[in-house]
Image 1 (cartoon, helix red, strand yellow):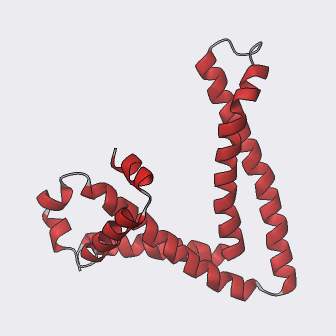
Image 2 (cartoon, rainbow, N blue to C red):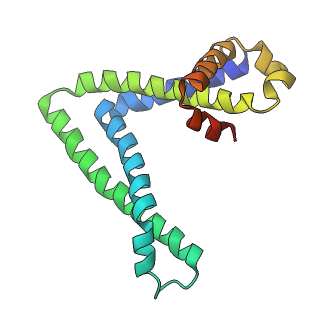
Length: 163
């Protein structure tokens, strides 16, 4: 195994350990929170930007500030919800099971992160040029997963990722 293989295993392992500590419920709600915060900011920043016209003259800055305010505010509110749900899980005595499922979730997230990095690297000349890539024990398996993901993803998503 090469250094890059150890880095890959490290990324997957750290993701799994973080999720083991936090638990599945916290990890899943955290992921949903980021998605919801982005969507809230994306769809409502125009409304807030209109309210900020008197305070911020530059249109682009006004939109960025509105997006940032909504994104952070949504994350804060959902973090409080996440905390309350985590306390509920702890009170029900499911924390051990929650942590095991959290570790599985974290390992899967780590694999997805590494596959995404391999997918991005495949769009460059790295696989053909760099010896460390070619000598890796793990990367061929990740390339297979990246190719499968490319074929499985809807064509619109694949086109955006390849652009």
